[in-house]
Image (tube, rainbow, N blue to C red; front, side):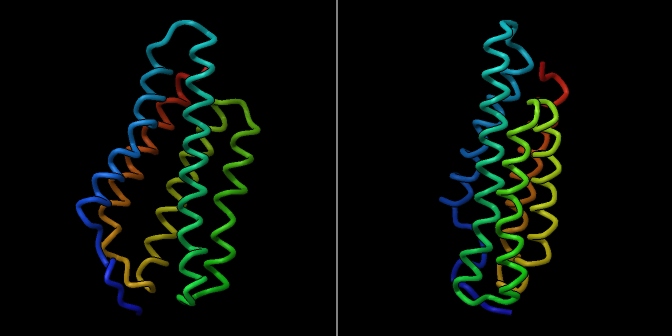
Length: 148
């Protein structure tokens, strides 16, 4: 296992991670409370797009670790592109179905990270990742259940 001076999240990382939940919460709330069909559709698209961006970001972390030579390099490279490809598919689906896929994808990203973060000495990030994944996934599920 590698050691890292970033083995656990800083206060800034926690604050930024929590701030990154704002678009998830806003999108889910907007989908649930807005009545105008055009605004609801916009909110659903915004939520799905943000979920896709975050899934892509989570995959990109593994490319960064692979570039640093953190084993298993091949597995990191392969997994690193998977969230982007699946998120793209989610954006091609109707919003409700896309949000279901994104919720599953965010959970899959966390499951993979539980395994691969340890080999990078990053297990200390899993608590924050669980909190962020939980809220983001819940927002996607709420959005999916009320999407037009």
